Image 1 (cartoon, helix red, strand yellow):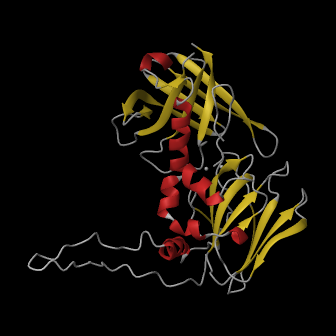
Image 2: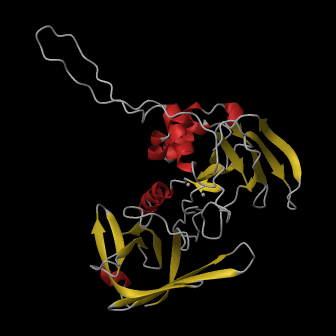
Image 3: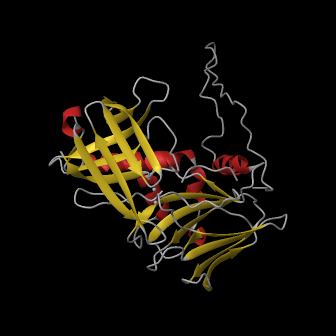
Length: 338
């Protein structure tokens, strides 16, 4: 998922909200009627098994992604999986399964992607892509800083799903995918995360983002707790301020600030601003900073504090809601006051 901040550094998790997206020709969905096995036990009553719904069928799971794009402008579904320094001796599907077991289990077609459909050097950022049109022509290319193609990595006259490693040459957007669907519509897309760590979107809605952001944050939160971090009490953050900076794609710096008063908290980032009543609540092993508590406007963030009380980790709530693309996925902030 594309990025975790350990106790000694700041990171911004690389990760974009779901968009609807494209016109496509796609396979018919797999049958989903209930199937009941009947065991002959003589006089005993027949025994029902669990209904078979097609959820574990690779073909059906692939169709489900394409169905999500029907009647939208989307031509390509893109999911950011995560980043790695080296995959030379690691099976890619096994790595995805270990990293994101729920995502992998929900989409069993991932296990059917063979080596000829795993594109690029086995390191960098990993993306799962599914063309909406199963009959689309597809190519994947390395490009230079000017967007010029330097190497053709993959070419096919069908829209098979692919796992693509990208952005391992020292600059972003070094890998692009080109789609020409059955209607003659053309899409060129470069794999890159935006300034807030989401999959980059196009304004025409041609990209459908199905990245498992919530599962990525669950893992990130758990990883933090394996180091010198803990769930904070209200007293740990009351009457304190915290801040971090991060670089935007245009080279400028963005700032994120949060200040806790006795009754109110204020959060400011770029053009965004929140001020509300607050409280911390621990639910199911997750400490949440709740804003506008006990009202219809209530929302929450997941929160941790380093054991030396120097840093806090703040992420979008991976339990109760979808990611908000106008806010960072997760941040580590340093104490500036209190």
